Length: 490
Image (tube, rainbow, N blue to C red):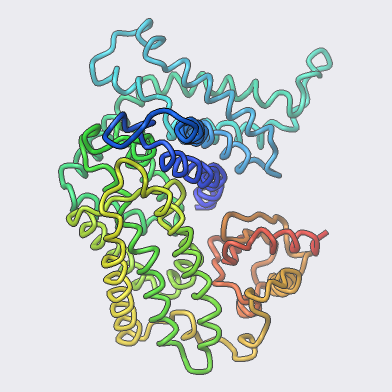
């Protein structure tokens, strides 16, 4: 479980590169709609606007077209101890070696390939292989960074031997993938085809499982199947490449569009239900926890601060939450609303994707959003009251803890000091890390952890994934808290 959590955290490094891609390509398509859509009435493929737009499109495409490499390097760095760049370099070396050895041209030299196998090796440069390369690079770094070689090979001792070992491991992995990849690829194709055949219902099933896998960090693996070109789908990549549904075999954008009404409007509706159902003496606490989370979801589609605020307090409600995503995804597919995102389904990506050729009926976000807000509010309020669910503001926490500093005060030093006190002091901390929304800590003695004290800092929640692991849900300002926390632990 710890491995999967660290993998999920590391994947957020390359994913964080996508917003600039979306902004550049969105502006580019607004200036030069003919750049990818071709010459159509009213579009002039010349002039300074076209030149600037085309340039911006290609700048953004440089990232989206190479997501697999970003995955390899991001995981190589993110999963390496101390986030050392040597792991990223080893991951890049592994990626280059695996993708070269398993290219169709090279594989066909040593064995005859069927049509299906050829298709599989044609798609070897994909995010899944990038993840494998990243894991190889990071693992080799963690295992061999301190290796001492004989004097005549001393130059290659320590970190210098990591890439060499990663290369050897990559050759072995390539031999295994030579036989395993066509089978795995075939299974992914079957899964994708099964979902595609279900059309709108399939898109709803995808959205449902996407949300359910969030707590385990496994949603990234599912996303790779449908958003990127692992099996020939690539809903996200085709959308931002300027394609339309006529260029693919599915309704382009159907695996992204349903997230917009849920994240932009559904989450604020659910947040309002939590505030209204909070205990009278805890409404301010609930407002502090869910309001900022709702704003983050609306503006940029960052949902973890909201989801982690209640998924472990009320897991049944989280399943309902995932079901609502499925329902609204089916609805968006049926009514023809199409929008895409480069980072997540927030207002920013909605605005910048509206000018892309595949975007359709984007103004439908207004009635869809109003419906999502009302449905999420009514369902959440009913479930919370009916089953007495312990959502934010309904927990049995000490009132004194509620009066402590709130994260919205932006006093990161005070927030960090309260968390440190709740974790048992710096003597109890063995490792400090953070992802996009969580402060991840490794500790010596779990009995010294005071969750109520930690929550009094105004954080969204505390997760105990292992005996010696504590994760504090801070939100998108976690980096500032982590920096102050590290200073206090020096």
